[in-house]
Length: 166
Length: 439
Image (cartoon, rainbow over the protein chains, first blue to last red):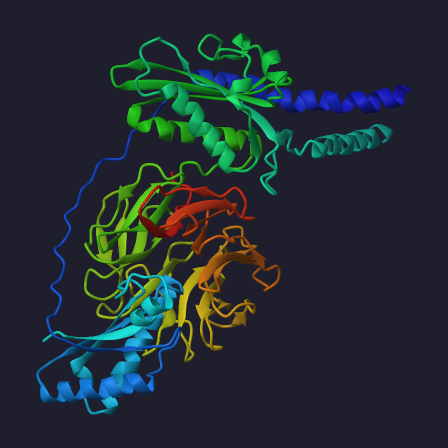
């Protein structure tokens, strides 16, 4: 019985020791500690540069299947026409802009858009266009042609645009 | 010897008693375990007392109690007692240990009690706040803050951190921030806000597309992708001085999906310099570039393990985007996702034990966690399309974008998918990054 009593009372005693010891010094700390001064962050306003002008001449875009960067037979026919125009305008430089639909993740789509632009560039080079007249950029899913959320919109957004920059 | 045995036996008893109430014992203190979140610890947060009786034009009294209650509720550990059940009038009762009638808090089931008061001099507000245990009555922590109406939220978050660390033994994350991208008028700029969605502030002024903000491990810088120069460049901007620089090694090219190494000395990112999107690591000036991946697919979205030894990433090398891990030199590549045709955006938990990522299901994405050894795949979201999951610095929460309530907004949830809260109010907001615990 005595043992049992001891077993029951000791945890309570330990509890008091453990919880009690931190108490007085903490109380003292709170009273003695100086108040913390909390200041708001400074206000900032920066200037936004004007947007770069969009080129006026555009060639016909080509389209891709979901998560694909290979050139389809339809796209080949358009690229052949674009190559013809580029050959006839030997001073023109072309920026190939790769784009994706909104499905898929933003970062992956930036890489995918780059592959789409590169695919078109490689094909145009095989048709005899000088590589230094062609630059590529990917906009991922950031510049949709159609803001809709269905297959019709997505199909339009999985594309390469060809912008005449010079 | 017998006595020693009894002491050991009693220590076990002591531990078991507290384990039964959901509490653990650590070096003499009683702590609420932070995982798994049980939302059972009853705590009363009382309206702050107007100490000098001047008109409370900023609603400091209610604001303090509401912000602290929201902070505690977000953790999933507490049962926040309904103020309607309180027996005393907060404006007439005391706020120090000797003046509090702990019995009246004990009978409504409160285990801890948060009380405080404030006084005003001109624009200055002085706030004092205290945390007590109710049974037995015990003062736990007290602080006094001097601020203005603009800093009431910050003061409340500061004291929530005190409460959290006193009760759990771990640091709170209530002063952390979330960086994200907001789309407005065809422009997409980086913004920051408090972790609970308040105090939204614009961070980038590029007038173009930005993406993938990433907080540096010391909390002083944000790296992000910007089209300011016409192609996707890596920008690093200081949060204090607001100065920024281009850290891209190849400026007229692809520089995307940055990830800081845990020591902050390196950034892993995707470049196209060798013809195909591959992952490289470099210093924060864009120098000392070293190649990590080499295959015919896309390699993107790296995320370092917290010990800095491994990097998770996305690769389409097997035909579809899947999550892989490699060591920090690009060796020992292991595929870890096998379910689903499109798995992307891995983020390695600061605790090291999980990766969070998004997986395409139909036309939507859902968020999953998986162990780094490819076991334990768990779906966390089911409604709308959910993308860009990122861990909180304590590894207990996840921020992500979701279309579940229309538009695209940021939400936070516990790491088991429960306790979801919408944090951005309106507009189109996505691509979040949770700050480290800020100084």
